[in-house]
Structure formats: C-alpha cells, structure tokens
Image (tube, rainbow, N blue to C red; front, side, top):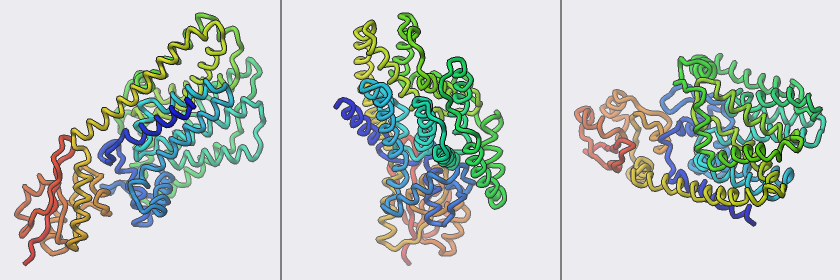
Length: 473
C-alpha cells in the first residue's frame, strides 16, 4: 500500500512540474520539430531544426511522437507522452526488480528514490530524449543484472533482445549508451574473476550489429543531407570529446549536481555505506554478484560521463535507475540486520518524509515561478492567432527569432526571414504576419496598411509578439 501511495504521489508531481507546458527552453522545440516535420513533410529518416539547421538526434523518439499524433491528433500529447510513459515504465520495472531481489522494503525505497527526486520530476514531461534513453539503458542493464543474479548463460534469444535494445538506444541518442553500460561491464568482468561470480558479457555481435545500424544511418545522412557531417558527426558526436564546439565543464561537474538533485537518496546511500563499513555489517557478508554489478554499472557510467568534457545535468540521468536499485539493496541489508535495524529506521523515515516535501516543494516552486513570469504567454498568444486566422480566413506566416517554439505553437512549417516577410507582404503573398513586436516597431514602413490584431502578454522570460493583418481596401 505504501508503494502505491508513493508511486501515486510521484506520478502526480511529474504531471504538474512542467505546467504550463512550453517549448521555450532546453532544446525542447528542436526535439518537437522532428516529429512535426515527419508528419507534415514526410521526412522520416533525417530532420531539421525550426531554424532549418540539421537535426542532430536519430529519429526513433520522433517516430513514436508521430505515431501518437496520428492516434490522438494532439501535438502536446504526442510530444510529451514518450517521456511520461518511459518514466512510468521505469517506475514499474524498478519496483518489480527491487521486490524480486530484496523484498518489500527494497521496493518501497527504490520506487521512492526514482519517483521523488528533482531529475525525474523535471524530465518526466520534457520534450527530450533523456527519459526514453534512460528506459532503454535500464532495460539493457537489467537484462545483464538478471543474467548475473540467476547465473544464466546467454541464449540466442537473449542476445537478439539485447541487440534490439542497443539498436533502440542508438536510434534515440547514438552510441552514448556505451558510456552508461560498457565501463561498468568491463569493471564487473574484471572484478568477478576473483570470486568466480557469474559473468555478464553477452558476446560481441549484439554490440557490433547495433552499432552498424547506427553507422548506416550516419552514412546515409552524410551522403544525402547537406551539412550533416559538420553538424552531426563533427559537432554533435565527436565535438563532445573536445573543447572546441561545446562549453566544457570540470571533471567534478556531475557529482555535486547528482548529490543535490538526487537528494536525500544520494546522502542516504552514502550514509548507509559508511554505517556498513563502521559496523562491519557489509564486510561480514560476501558482496552479492548482482549488487557488485549495480555498483559497477552506476559508478562506471558516472565516471566516464565525468571524463567527457561536454556536460549537461540531464545527460547523467541514466545512472539514476541503477542507483535506485542499489539503494533498495542497501536498505534491505540494513533492515535485515538486528544490529542496525533500529538505528537506521528513523533515518529511513526522515528520508522518505524529506523527499516527499522536497520534491513537492520543487514542483510548487516551478509552477509558481512559471505563473509569476507568465511563461506560457506565447503559447496562449499562438492559440489566439490560430483561432483568429481560422475565423477571418487569413493567410499568415511567422517571422523567425530566437524563440524556436513559436513555429510549433503556430503549427507552421518554416520561419520567414524579415526581408522575405516584408517582400511577401508587399506582393500580397500573405495577408497576415506574426513577428516580434520590436521588429514590427522598427519596420512599420515595410508593412503598409497593417492593423494590429493581437499582442502577446508581457513576460520577463520571452519577448512580445504581434499579429498583424492587412487592412481591407
């Protein structure tokens, strides 16, 4: 019952944290535009950004969003449902795995750790690939965990499943999946030889075959898409390992962020480790092979991602699910020991209460801040523009600026450059335009006979836009 209540609270907070929904930050508009372009222009393998650059992510999440749109005819749902469903699947998988391995107490704290932390709350409805990648990465690591736990050999069917999961990860975000799995797997395979623990290696062909599929996609892009090699190969992939294209961060960048955004669970896990060491509880027992794999899996991914110069907080998220399983295992070990049970129970309760209050407070702060800043001003403005244009039968386009989401709010395929917009206005190519209010004030002479129909609401985080139409003769 407690697990159900915690899971319900987590899902509620996930649903609310990013309300009101916008596409104005964290490159959400770029990801949303991939599926929009697929449906509107039938570009299913290679897409672009709203400002007509080359899309740098493989297309799998875009395919899923396009399929959801065909079923629902609602873009907001189509863009956000992949991340939300992936988060729900992770919550269920973590609960199931922790319960099976270590019992109800492990399941409760593993679910609480995944559901009640700032990273999960923020990413659950983001229009990004982080949550789907975390799901597929976790399924790969979980398959290895089950093989180790059951001391099973890899069958052809198991390898085929692994190959399918690796291919899916490659088509979500490229070979970054290797960074989250292979370092830990190499470490585990090296360490397990000392104790004769079961191996977790599947053989090479699933890894090579899935990489070959990704490289075929890359080769096709280089051959058919202008600018693909520079934008995707050099900047997006190779550029992550240099300090040329992306802003580099220090090697310790992820650690303090993970400690804070995964609190209180990060602190609880560290505290339990110290307690085990001081009381010799863990040293008195042989470390189980599946627990060793969880340690290698999570720490290996964190270490390699820390070494890569290009960093952003959300990229480390795939290490969170194995950390949740590891915490569940620690809690089960602590509560099974008569020496520790009564000592750690107050801390477990305090962690659970703090997580509920901390995550709920974060959600309330996000909603209040968005409301105070009128963050969805452009979303509401665009909705009014679409309704007015349909009512008055206006042919309108939108002039581009830094707000890439405007293109998607208005359901247009491309931005117009300011000069092209002025030319289209003067030649009657359009009879209405959406453009930044500042640009309209500077170029009023270029838009003869224009009347202002709508002006977006004021907001400190997004500029104002105006909707103009030609005055009837």
